[in-house]
Length: 137
Image (cartoon, rainbow, N blue to C red; front, side, top):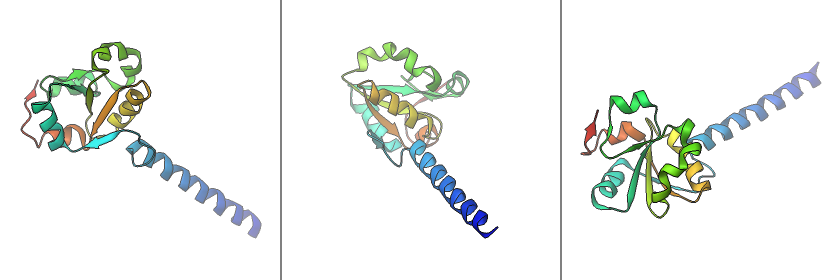
């Protein structure tokens, strides 16, 4: 009986470590080969740099509720199939945002894997609402 409990404890801690690693990966805390920027840094880039593309990876409904003026919408689930829409952005930085910053991590990984230069906005649209960027519906 004691041996079973020991094995169960070991399996429990392996599972917990796996969950922690998975969560850290999805948040971009580990193995992220792209840059993160703050909402204020995103604002400066969007306002001052003509060589930047703004990409919203939220859903169509979220986009309709309000988005940053000039943003291109490609929902995360459709991004890989629609990379041709970004072909003119291959030599630009792409400011990527979602609602809170999690989906944009996944989007940034896809973009980076296809030769783009993503800049993931920390805190996503939630953070961008605290900037002076124009929100349109």
